[in-house]
Each structure stands twice: as structure tokens, then as C-alpha cells.
Image (cartoon, rainbow, N blue to C red; front, side, top):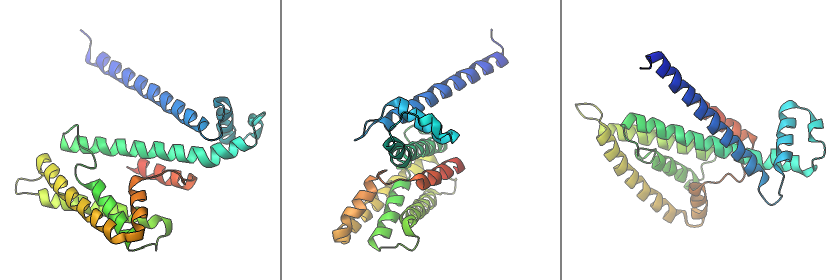
Length: 222
């Protein structure tokens, strides 16, 4: 009969092994993605470029085409790492919602948070609110998500406190209303409807290291 300490160590070792395996697979996926595109770059060259950038030793890129570092460091890696961080943020938020609602199918869409973010961004685009520059739309999206979450909590509150069923039902109702509001704004947007649709679809096409840094900061904070 294994002791509690032995069982605990077994689970800890299994957890560490899983983390290392998943981290290795993620690293392999990042390297593979950096090799793909209009300009094919060998994985060995990608590794040399990353190693040289991390160590600050340009000599490690001996034999590498001069164009490859620009493509990898300035174009591909920011997009890949931004997508990786966004994916990890979505996974984290999904885990939080599942833990709070005790429902393995819960996600930001369940409570209408995603619909609130989309509604806030659509308002900013429709009214051309750009006083914060490129961060205006994300800020309005964040405010819309937070406001929606508090509104859902307010609707689902009762004398007996919050329940997961009430939260889910309120979230679905609010999400449906906000989705209708987004459709109405698309109708009002006329020529700007393409901008709203493009933002809602999402893109990593123009991401830079600044975007990677912001995503990393918010994911770590979360």
C-alpha cells in the first residue's frame, strides 16, 4: 500500500513530466511555424537565429542567409508568439470559468463576456473613437467585457446568492442581446462594416514585439 507521500510524489513527477512534454511540443510547433511561409527557412537556421538573438552573438548565424533573420525575428516570431500567448490566455480563462461554474463546457462565451468585448469594439469602430490610438478598440473591448460580466452577475443575483445555473442562463440571454446589437451596428456601419467584421474575425498579420510584450504582461498578470 503506497503511502500518501509516495502518492503525492508520483503525481508531482507525472505533472512535471507532462509539463516538460507539452513545453517541448510547443517549442517544436513554434520552430516549425517559423520555417513555413513564402520564404522557406530550414529549422536549423531558425534555431541559429533564435540562439544568436538570445545570446547576442551574431557569429552563431554563420552561413545563414542575410534575409532569414529579418523574416524570422521581425515578421514571423512576433506573430507566432502573439498567437501562442493569446491561446494560453484563452485556455486560462476557460479553466477559470470551468472552475467557477463547475461546468466542463463553460468558456468566455457562456457568460457573454466575448459578446460584450465584441460589442464594445464595434461601438469604438462605428463611432470612430481613436483617442487612444491603436489601443482604443482593445480598451473598449475590455470595458465591454467587464461591463457585461458585472451585468450578468447582477441579473443572476438572488436572495440565495449566485448559482452556476443562473449565471449560465443570464450569460446566454445577454450574449444573444449583444449579438443582435452587433448585427444592428453592422447594418448602421455601411462602408465600415468590413472593418467590424475583420476585427471580429481577428488577425495576427501585423503583430509586433510590442504586441507580444503586452499580451505577455496581461497573461502573466491574469
